[in-house]
Structure formats: structure tokens, C-alpha cells
Image (cartoon, rainbow, N blue to C red; front, side, top):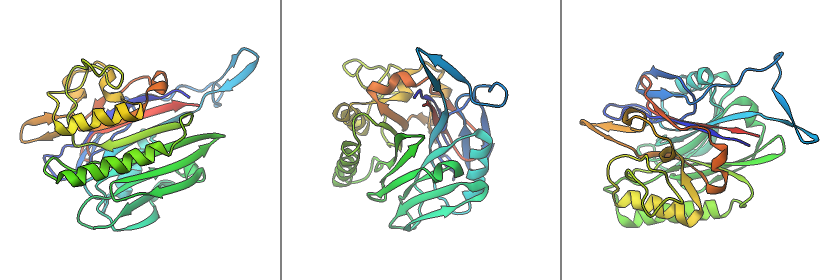
Length: 301
């Protein structure tokens, strides 16, 4: 299963969504910026491309996974579903939904949101799935209004998709420690030999360069590392994960995931197990219209 990841982020200097998606095109909607990372490969004769490997025939199927801070899901469901359809995003992790409850809700175009929240004014996480993948859901673990995990079985392969929303810089240290403890527990619960993707608004800056941290990140972060960014790096080391965004050399405009008051930073990340990094073809931040920036990756099964 090969994954190609690109990143898309929203403009937080105004109300909007924060997204991550894979694709090569960027587009704008109301409230943020969207981007897709990569193109689907052409199919021969209208069928999925098949190739021979040794004596076995292997079929490669692309699954696109993204992450987006939506700011709120209220009145944005149809807009997000439309964008996912046009950008061919199959699974989207969303943060800061600000919806109370533990439910699943259908949107237009066959998309379904699995979400969890305890306060209609803050936090909340979810995962939006394309219709064909809704039938593949095996289990949904709603850990808290900052962490949830959706387990899918796609053509015999288990894929765990985790949506996470870290506390902001000004939050109490106890709240931050609680978040990382919850995320540790969820990742620990995923078997090492299974596919795992985390789409998260980490609210931390891991910084540029990777001296001493080559096993978990590349050299292409942004600005300087802060305390919250160090927490991200420490988590990646504990869980043998890797910060995909930082492995691809891009212009600064294609690394920025947050803009406010003239400041440009990188706080949204896609994480994968280090052992699966070879499945990733690219990761890029593209600014769309109104929903925000996306980080998206696709897997080859």
C-alpha cells in the first residue's frame, strides 16, 4: 500500500476551516483554503491498472486521506462534501467541529461524518468518509473531544484513521498532558503491522531542520521549534511515527498551514509509521479558497 501525501491548510486570519488533503490542485471556498495533493493515475480501458509481480497479479487501489481544521461544522457540511467530491478525497480528518454529541451524520454526495464532542462552543473531532468507505467501517472509538479513531477494512486490509486536535499554546499543562496520554493509548492499541494514519491539528511548531531527530522528521519544517512542537517530536519518537510534512522540500508557501496577523507557521501534520514512509510519494501545502489548507495522502493497496 503506497501513500502519497500533500497538505492543504485554511487561512485562520478569518473564520474558516483548516484542512489537509492530498492532491495537486488548489481551490477556494467560503471560509478557508483547500488543496489536494496528487493526481489519480489514468486507468486503462476504464479499469484499475493491474500489474504482475512475480507470479502474482497485484492490483493497486488509491485511497486519499486528508486532515482539516474546520473551525465549526455548522453550515459547512455540504460545502466540504462538495470539495471532497471534486478533489477526490476519500477520508478526511476534521478538528474543531464544535458539535456536541457522539453520532454519525450523512452529507450530500453520500459522505458521512463520524464525530464526537462535548461542548458546542469548542473542540470536537471527526472523520468524514466517502460513501463507498462507510460500508468498510469496523469500529469507531470516540476517546474524547480531541481524539477519535476509525477502523476500516478495505479489501481485506485494515486501516486506522485517527483525527486529533491538540490543546492550544495557552492551555494548561494538565490539559496538554491528558491529550498526549490519550493519543499514546490509541496509537498503542493499533497493531504494529496495520496501516495507521493520523491527521491532526497539533498546535505546535516542530521547526526547520532535523538535527538529532532524523528518525521522526525531515529537514523541511518551518521557523523555530516551540515547547508544543517538542511534544509532537517526543510523541513521534515514542510511537515510532514520522511527520510526513517535513520530508519534502517545498517553497515556504507550500509548507505554511496557519496564517494570522502576518505570521506564517506550520501546525497541521499528517503522521505515518516510520516503517511505512516508502508508501508516501509527496506532501505539499496548497492554499485554496475559503475552507483552509489541506494535507492529503494516498495509499496504494
